[in-house]
Image 1 (cartoon, rainbow, N blue to C red):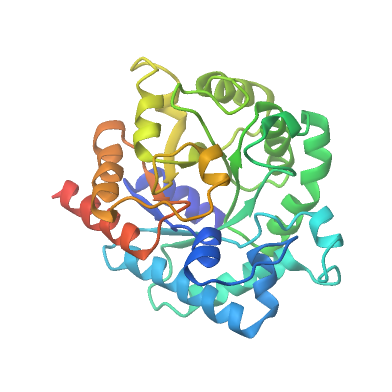
Image 2: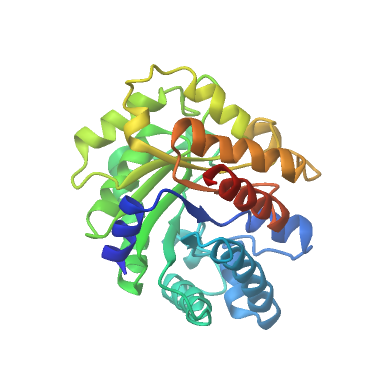
Length: 314
C-alpha cells in the first residue's frame, strides 16, 4: 500500500487523519494506561481492544462519509525497544501486532482503498523537554529497531510525532529513511515558528532535507492549537520552504502551550465548531493537506473539521 499512499498523498487535495487517542483514553474513557507502553498494551486486553476499535472506526467513518482519504496511526508512540523490554509484554511483537490490529479494522470497511496506516514513533524521552533529546547518532541507533519492526509489519508509511528537537529528529529521519518506505516527521513548535529546542522550523526542514536520503515525504506539526500554528506560519515569507514541504497539522483543542498542557490536571478543550473552522481555514489559506486532531480532540472535533472542509470545497 506504500505506493498507493504516495499516490493519494500527491493527488488528493485533502486527507483526514485521526483525532486524539492517548489523551482521549486517559481523560474520556478513564482507562488506566500502561506506564511503559501507554495504549500499545491495550492490544493484549479484550476491553482495551474494544475501546481502541471503537475510537479508530469512528475516525475512519467520519472521513469516509465525506469521501476523504483517512490516515490512522498504530498505537506505538511509546513502543520502542527500551520501553518494551521494561514492560510485561517483552515477549510480544508489539509493533507487528499493532499494525495487524489496525489492518483488521481497515478490512472491515467495504471501501477501504482510501484508508492508510502509518507506523507511529516518538522520541525516546519527554517530547516537551528538548534538553533530554538524543543526538543524531544516538537517535539513529535507538530508533532503527522500531522503524524496522513497523516497516516489516507492513505499514503504509512511517511517522515520528511530537518531535521537539532537530538533533533527535534528524536521527529518527535517518532510521526511517533506511526502511525504504515513505516517512513523515512531525514537529511540536512554539508560536514564533521554532521547534522547542529553538531551531526555526524552516531551518530544521532544510537541514533534514540536506542530510538525509531519501528525504521525508513530508513534514508536519502536531500537538499545538491551530491558532499557534497560524502564528508560526506568519513568521515566514510566502516563498519560504515551509510552504513547499510542510503539509499538515494534528492540532490540539486548546491554545495553551505544549508545556502547560503536559502539566495540566484537567482536559482543556475548545469548542469543536470553532476548532473545525480554524482547521479548515488552514486548507484554504495555506493549502495544508493532512489535517486531524491531537490532545483534547475527539469525534466531535473531527466531525466539525470534515464538515467545514467539505463546505470550503463547495
